[in-house]
Image (cartoon, rainbow, N blue to C red):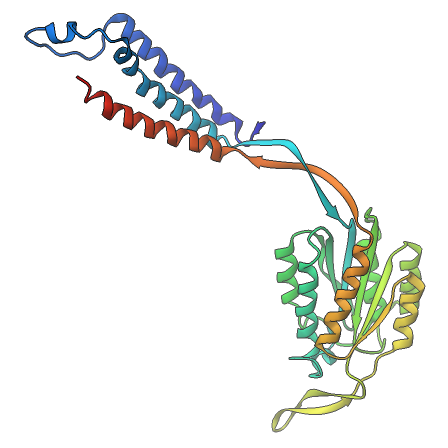
Length: 327
């Protein structure tokens, strides 16, 4: 057992001083007293039980005070070991945020559906470190690898198509994701690359980025997002925003080659349901690499000491009430 705030334990000197003060009073015969006309009624009572009961409430008060001091010092135990399933996997989600992700072939649109389903995927991976990279005409890290699910989900929600210059730099997005995960010592390192277009910008070609990923032993799952044929896309006109059907162009051969070169797989998502199924499939495949780890579990004990203090105080009140009514 150890204490979160061990310096507070010096307060235990208070109950020690109270006990010494009580002993001093008893030995010096300075306990509270009153004058009566005769002590005959008291002299007739010679029960040692009453003499002992007289000091029990004080002892309970000292125990309660000591327990409270120990409780506020926050005792913790690390003697237990918990065995848990952990994949030991680091995952970077590289997401296309070009304006084409505003197409309405998904509900309500591609980027919103991709974010919502990605958040569900994140929630299903409590033991893994996950990071986020976004790319359009360029790329940057939205969130580094972390196990902080709340921060990760909040940063995922903040993704929008107006974050960076428009375009589709698949190579830059993949290269940035590789840079974020290449130095990881996780048993398995994975990149999930999601895009709805054709590489048309960026300084690094997708093929080069894939070779870098392969060199570092990073597996890449690629997802092409978009319906077959055409998709409704919001276009600004003199009469306001109107929907126009635009051709869906996804370089499936490129995405398939990236996945194949790195030991991953290529998927095509044509609607929300299909995209959700893809993430579920990736989730199952990566969980197949499960290992068993053990680590210490820190258990707070202040509640136990708080309960001891409460019980002692209640007993003190009860015994004081009883003693005052004894003959």
